[in-house]
Length: 122
Image 1 (cartoon, rainbow, N blue to C red):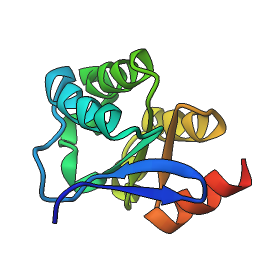
Image 2: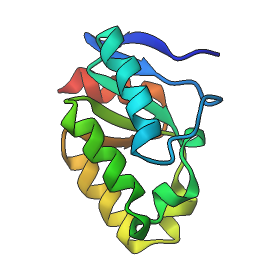
Image 3: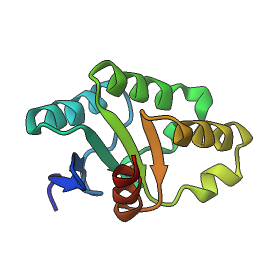
């Protein structure tokens, strides 16, 4: 299934497929950012399956580098899927997820419907 641009409420979101290239660093994130910008997306929804385990180990700085790259290009990022096993294993990640979900740049949501709900509430 290819990545698709969907309007969630009134917000254009690039919904990435789970079988695409994993986002493992800034370079691979830039490819998705370029696709999102080219299609006119405001948000990019990336399934958990597209992230490496290193993303969830904050000491690797992969998450911070990827999120910063999205922010630089003024695209917002939603991580879509169940990350409970990662959160259960790391207090730092749990805090990162909680703080991210309070903001407007990065959200962790269980599914695309939850993202749609958040976007239509704001």
